[in-house]
Length: 163
Image 1: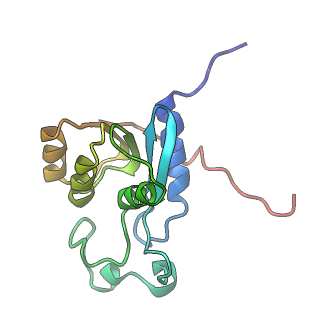
Image 2: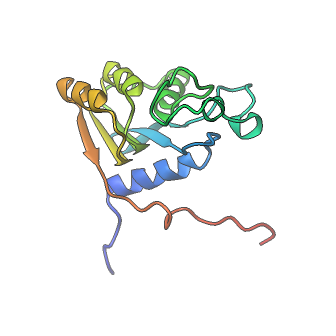
């Protein structure tokens, strides 16, 4: 018998990438999950709030206005994956204090500030995001920011109908 299991970090990051596949954002698919003691507390992906028409159907306001990626987050109908993790945890009564966050993309400044106030312990991310102030604030708050090189394409299964 071989003990060639993936690490817990690889396991949770692969789930974050799977969660990202539910995204309704036309610009970037992002998934996130909160984990404590190797148990998933909440998941989230980026997209518009419940009961609102998805950008996949309506179009992206930021694209229509030629707003570059990473700028003017307030002009967006969607929520970030990390924001949805926080909301889902709150809705379902799960405290995120001391939890780890696994994100397909490094959190932006807004999400970083929210995660700091949730008393997150660590943030694992696969893709980097050019936000130096977010990195500085996470460091000042004592939250570890850990980059995991990860190839998601091999972990997302193809669905076949009629099997």
